[in-house]
Image (cartoon, rainbow, N blue to C red; front, side, top):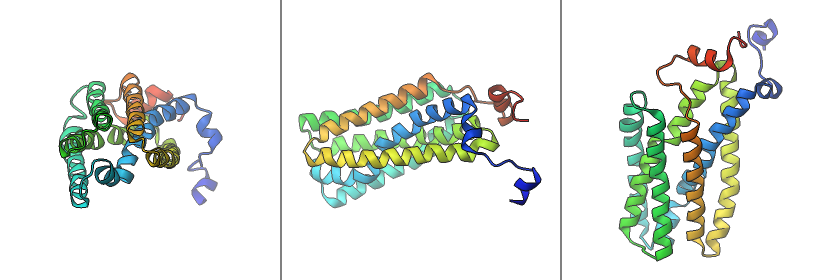
Length: 229
């Protein structure tokens, strides 16, 4: 409060933030990349064991092992792919390939459910592909771009908006997903998930920001000019 009163810092309001059109465009971009993808990722977090046990007929122990494998692959993918390649290869191409892993993973579940191919091999393929996607694509790219694309004065405010949006729509989707499953339409729910992931893939690939190799000061000047100084 003392810093605000002295004029050393300025408290950001909704009006301040949304008066900048570039902020609106960036929030929409990050929502398309992260919040829409999170509908699929959040469903895995909530319902992976249910899908393994009640859709694919696996034991609880197998479901737990598959979930452990999923998170293990997530960690490895973060370290070896995103951290290892994120600053040295074309980010647009990297994002596309990794986002495609997520699309293929859920397409595999959709096809298997439709054809009633309920075996462990399908689930292993799913957790490997979506684990790679989870650890190295939308989640870490969102965190990177949120830090790069917003200057310090807006960064926390912007992240709060996108996180709130992601959690809100995930909560709504989980209610819908549960209802679809109760009616015995897992294939339909999985197909909808593929649609979410295709949307996130397209948004991130088409609008990949050109920030690689640049300092935060360079990025801010390119995007905001000298208006913040």
